[in-house]
Length: 242
Ligand code: URA
Image 1: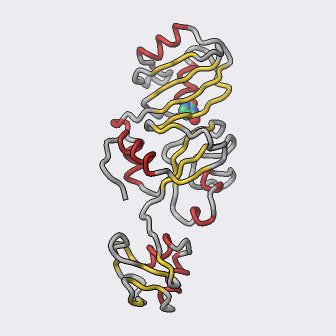
Image 2 (image 1 turned 180 degrees about the horizontal axis):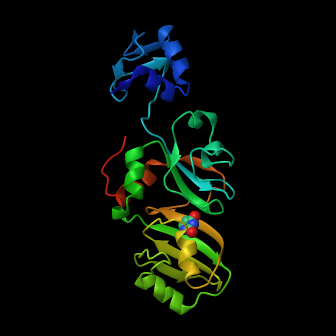
Image 3 (image 1 turned 60 degrees about the horizontal axis):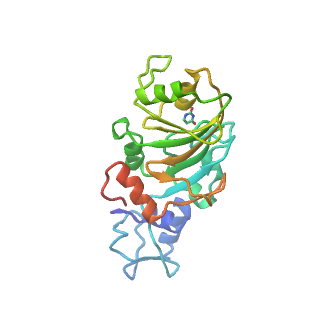
């Protein structure tokens, strides 16, 4: 159950104060009856709500998949820099969306954005060991000793011990695929830094078993599809979502 003004605001893509205005002016019905009580608790899954005679489809939470472009911060809000939320449409900006975890400003690729705190918490929980895959372009060659080091489990310079990671070569001697199950600050860059290799390009290609769709260009985003949602839920063993 949620307050009627909240539901009308989210489902009707209007501000909370506009939603209140519409309700007070008698433009909102619940199960066929005009309701003027903005704080009435309604179950949008069971009750039919209309605004201006149009049925509202209400989604409690929103899940967005974005191909994060370079030069944009993975944050909800920043005084100076453009954030991933700034890229979203005005309707989406009205929701309290935030990115699930962080990619560096110069990293591109798969980023999930949501307003579902529990879901995000699960995906970020270290105990869930959610897999993340990156395509990395380095400023040097990938030697077998590096692959072996990643597989054994590295210890970062500050003493942080990492779980074993998978490092796979590609046809290019300086381009690799890396799979990790943690999300430490600058983790990939620090892992290669242990071998005196610098990261020139970093792109996240997969998160929680979900692969970045080929047709999602840098800077583009869309709602996570039902089947994609299942993949993410499976990665953290959640049974259902709102
Ligand atoms: N590791 C990094 O170093 N940077 C990222 O953005 C993600 C993982």
